[in-house]
Every structure is written in structure tokens, then in C-alpha cells.
Image (tube, rainbow, N blue to C red; front, side, top):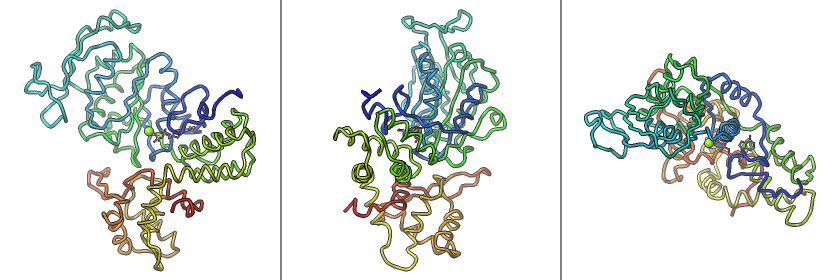
Length: 419
Ligand SMILES: Nc1ncnc2c1ncn2[C@@H]1O[C@H](COP(=O)(O)OP(=O)(O)O)[C@@H](O)[C@H]1O
Ligand SMILES: [Mg+2]
């Protein structure tokens, strides 16, 4: 194993799905995901940006990938359900002949590009390509030509089941309301089909999984909501220790815990720091990590990955004044696990931070400033329908990576790292 390179083990910029990549078990969430997939429930993995959702699911998907049965939709941004169907059918060896036809133009040649607007229903025509090898094709399950005009078309489900596909749809929070509605209908059709081997897995960044897929009594039974939180200390250790060991590098206990601390619950940061440290040790032909390796790795992270966000943070907080509410608000936003934060949650967290009751009126001004151009729009407004359909106002970081930067600023002194 000694001939492994650090980048064979630590993959901050990729998913840890390779044989030599270190992967930390995610405990209950991982067990729940496995169970859901075994039983044919539809896992809905949700949690903040960067907590390891995609990695977790793609790791669990390895058996499907090995059989070339994985269809991974990285994001639903700008997509309609017919794009997902097209991806599935293409994977099964179909050629898409016509996609997205307006209802008034159905069957005609009126191909549409761009968004699917009201009045246009999803319609897709596909033809079995003759050149593709189809191991899944049993005579009775094959359709030579398909015209799909509804999200609930059960033939798609049947074909996917015959082939034993796993459909993974990521970044669901980027979907349009139309997409979400169609997806809910599709999941319902899936639920009613009692599939033996077709599996669906959904992921997105949300506090409230109901917003990722329309809550519908027909799919509640089938969805299995799985929340993924920032990595725990022992999960961070499960990246650092086995990873370094695989490289034949020894790391003193004090440095392990310092790395866990600097990682602030972000598997990405832990991976980044480990890769940097391991490369330093290798470069110097050493086998033991020392404190300066971690210090250098953190400095490197701050300079190359977080410099812009540290500068934006510094420009946004006040340097004088007794309460420094803008700073309190930013730190409260970073401490709160949810991506979208209500005023109530902010009031509670800021009050805890300053040790006295803080009225929302004291925070609304600073909050507005943080959303203004003057403060580089470090925060933004997010309007979201709640469960009762009413629209609520939330605050969120404009750059989701800001959260871990501020957590890092709070946990270690980065002052001298950025000028
Ligand atoms: N369980 C894990 N073990 C090791 N590294 C992980 C794990 N989960 C995530 N990572 C690392 O963190 C990075 C970000 O994770 P990712 O899955 O992209 O998060 P999300 O999808 O929640 O935004 C990955 O590129 C990977 O390097
Ligand atoms: Mg992801």
C-alpha cells in the first residue's frame, strides 16, 4: 500500500467512490439509506451544502454502477421531468426522437426549446436503437417505440424495473415548481408499481424535505426522509486516521484532534487539509506529521479556497460598537444548521450569543445591510412556501461555502492568514 499517492486516498474535489479513497461511515444516516434502498423506499437525503449527501448516495450506489445500472442526474436546474425520462430511456438504449411537444402541437413537429411553460405538457417520443446491447430486454418488456405524455406513465417504470436501474436525482432544491410537481406524480406512479429492482434516490439542500418533493398523501408512505448533518468528530477521524495510515504516515493524536477542529464539520475541509498535509510529508520524505504541516495546510486552505469569503466577512462585520450585530448575525447564521433561517431562529441564536434578549427590531437593520450591495450581499432573502402554502421569508448565505468559512473563523485564528 506504501506506493499510494496522497491524491489516491484523499479526494477533496471528487466523490470518494474509488477503491483507494477514504470514506467515513455516516452512521445512522448511512444505515437508513441502505435499508431504504434494500426495501424499495425512495430515500430523500437532505441537509446543508457540503455535508456529504452526494458522496453518501454515490457510495451506496456502487453496486448499481458496477453493473452499469446507475443513472445519475447531477442537478435538475433548468430541467423538466421529460429530461429525466430521456436520460433513463437513453440509458436503456432508446433514441429520443421528439422531446417536449406542446399539448396543442402534440405529435407534430413543433419541437420546443427552453422552459416548459404553462399549457405545455411533457411529451417524449423514443425509438429503440438497434445498435445497443440490451441485457435487460426480455421479450415481453420491450417496447420498440414509446410516446410518453404523462409523468405517471407506468411503462417507463416497468422498463426501468426490468433493467434494474437506480435513478439518482441530485440538487432537487434547484427544480422549478413544475418539475417538483411532475416528480411527485412520478414517485407516486413508482410507489404504485411495486418494483422489484428499480430504485429511485433523491437529494437536495433543504431544512424541510417537504419542499423538495411536494408532500402528497400518495407518496408519503414511499418517501424515506434522511437528514444528513455535518460530520461528527468521530466521522472526521474516520477520514484522517485510516487515510494517513493507508499512506504509511503517522499522525500524533494532538494533530488528529486539531485537524478535526479545523475541519468544522465539513468533510470537504477535512479532505483538503489531509491532502495538503500528506503531500507536505511526502515532499520532505518524512513519515510523521508535525504541527507546521497542519498550520501550512490551513493557511493554504484560507488562501486558495476561502480568501474571498474571509475578505467579504471582514468587510461586512463592524469593528467597533458594543453589540456588533452584523457580526452576531453572521455567526448565528453559521452556527444554525439550516440553510434557510427565519427571523425567529436568528433572534434566538443571537440572544444566546450576546447573553441577553434581543428583539427582532434590533436585528432587522443589520440583516438588511448584510443583504445590500454595500456589504457584498453576503446574505440574501429567500421566499419559500411553508407547509400551509403561505410564503415565508428566510435568510440564507449567498455563497453556501460561507458557512464553513465563518465556522472556521470562529474556531481558529485566521487573522494573520489573509491580509
Ligand atoms: N463520508 C465521507 N467520507 C469521506 N469524505 C467525504 C465523505 N462525504 C463527503 N466527503 C468529502 O466532502 C466533499 C463534499 O461532499 P459532497 O458529497 O459533495 O457534499 P454535498 O453533496 O452534501 O454537498 C466530497 O467531495 C468529499 O471529498
Ligand atoms: Mg451534492
